[in-house]
Amino acid sequence: MKITFEKPKKIVAQYEGHSVITDLTKDLGGENLALNPFQLFLTSLGSCGALFMRLFYENHNIDIEGASLNQDFEFDNSGNLKKVIIKVKAGKQFPMDKKEGLIAMMKSCKVKKHVSPSIEFEYIVEQ
Image 1 (tube, rainbow, N blue to C red):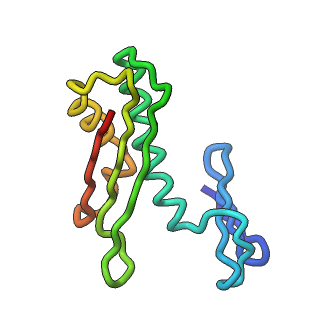
Image 2 (cartoon, one colour):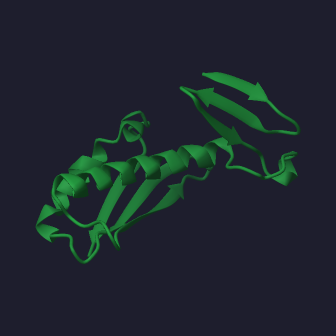
């Protein structure tokens, strides 16, 4: 991974042929043109879970149309991440008897596996 610095506060990370830009908010001297690194981390948690959700649907021949995933976060008094709440709208085609299998698949996300065990993950699956 190669990381370069652009003005005023942008950072460009290049890894395996892809580039990711992070920035800071204007009050911190950035231009707020991209996610800050912590927002990118939170986004990677959601994206990873969503990828494994998609794979589960494909593996079980379930139509993913109308399905969605939302994440909410709880922070402690110091602003540290305490809990990630993953809310899955499974869609009308989803057989709810496969709910536990879906959650197990989403838990296999490699990003989640590298997160501190002190952070709780809650999964909610609804039709």
